[in-house]
Image (cartoon, rainbow, N blue to C red; front, side, top):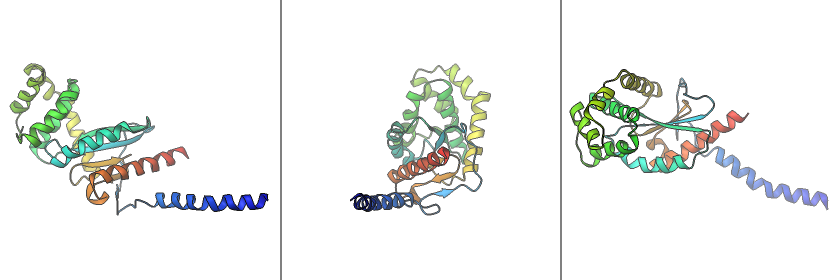
Length: 213
């Protein structure tokens, strides 16, 4: 009787084992995501880093933002999620400076969506310091505080670091997601923006399992 019970339990476990293997093989390197040839150092080695590389003037990033916000809310405490601006033009560099200036001035909660909306929805270029300053002042930042921060050593250093980081990641467009400095996820390989986050979650779990060993 005991042997029969053990055999039946094994039969019940077989489908579960198959499902686990199927899940493990669900996403494939080179097919659903890219492996970064030289891993990029993360800012906290004790956590699983996820970086969203974006541009305020990118309609795809604008559409992706609500999905990312909801995804972040579901993550465990061991995930370190943050955003990094991409730049391959002088205008994008200005927008990257706006991003870091908003962080430094503690107005990111107001300016993040405003920058997206101004560039993507209203189609205003924001390609000069004066235009960006006008937007910041609309949200309560004084012209003096903006100018001092926008042109500060700290903001300029962060912009340079973000540019170097994106180059190390091998970014080809926006939005793209980087998991633990090792994997690059794009909509073209994942299949859609929603599937990007599915692949990212898969890779987060992959890194979590590796760190637990």
